[in-house]
Amino acid sequence: MNSKILITGFNGELGSKILDFLAQKNYSIIGLDLNKKLSQSDNIKLIQGSISDKDLIQSIFDNNIISEVYHFAALLSQTAAKNPKLATEINENSSINLINCAAVHGVKNNIKVKFFFPSSIAVYGPRKIHNASEFDIIKPTTIYGINKLAVEQYGSKKHTEFDSKNYGIDFRSIRFPGVISSDSIPSGGTTDYAPQMIHAAATNKQYICKLSKETLLPFISIEKTVLSIHQLMGMNTINSTLRVFNIQEASFSVEDLYKAIQHKFGEFKIEYVIDNKFQSVADTWPSSLNCDEAKKKWKFTSSEDFEKFIKKMINEMIKNEKN
Ligand code: AKB
Image 1 (cartoon, helix red, strand yellow):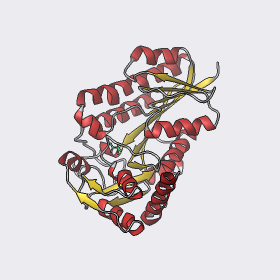
Image 2: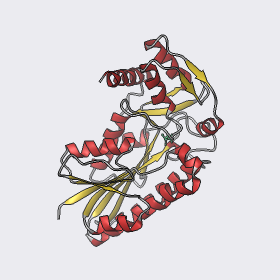
Image 3: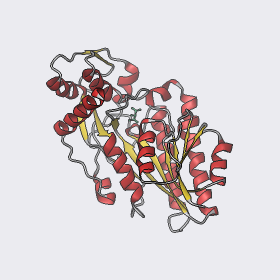
Image 4: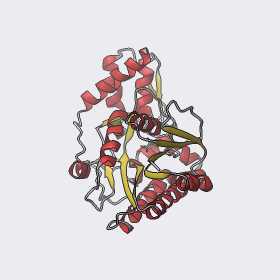
């Protein structure tokens, strides 16, 4: 039987991009998502279902040889805060079940299953820190951050169990900052204001911002996100007991972003209507991430040039609006 790649949450911002990227490379893919999408290609089988359906997950592993898992099915921070029980069910319990299934699958088939988990800057807290490294003390205050941290720790522990073996699970994770994509406008997250603001400007609309102008957060483009996941998962082994890495491309305040957008769209207006549900979360997340470990262990690169980064994002968004 040919081995396959399992992608959960294939309709989401990251899942859909990874699905396209891997499909273009002709991998055999099984996708799982709550929502339907028709597969255009023979090498992709898409299944409609929930990540919390344990029988369904088990049957996917029973009926296929799964060599890699990309697990994107999740609730974002603001949606999680509104539904804490569901968040723990989906973001934590279902992720742990998936890790367990992958590890057992690896043992049964005598293979090492590579498992990718997208973590988040939400694991940090309770206070905003600058240049946050993987070794800083972290105490998340949100349910989203608590769930993400629990999965990071569980996956890393599972990885250690199989460290010296040729089978089991090889857990790899990235702590993502806000992700900016030119062709999708996310909702349900705390960092969504950045892509939403650029999109509003590109479509001649005013933007109502729920965060204060001083709020400083790290970001990355979707293109760099996809390449980084591919780079990390493409390594045969990562010579490190650290399994979760920080990456970012640029760190900027809401006002920095507004000014950069205004430079391009002189008419663009913003109104600040601070929402404490958003502000109180953003205030516990780091203003920037230290990426030294990713640079050392799997050669992550980033120019960290805000001007260049934001110019590229705005131009991509305009190009997309025109098409
Ligand atoms: C969110 O804002 O919830 C996400 C994240 C940083 O994890 N974009």
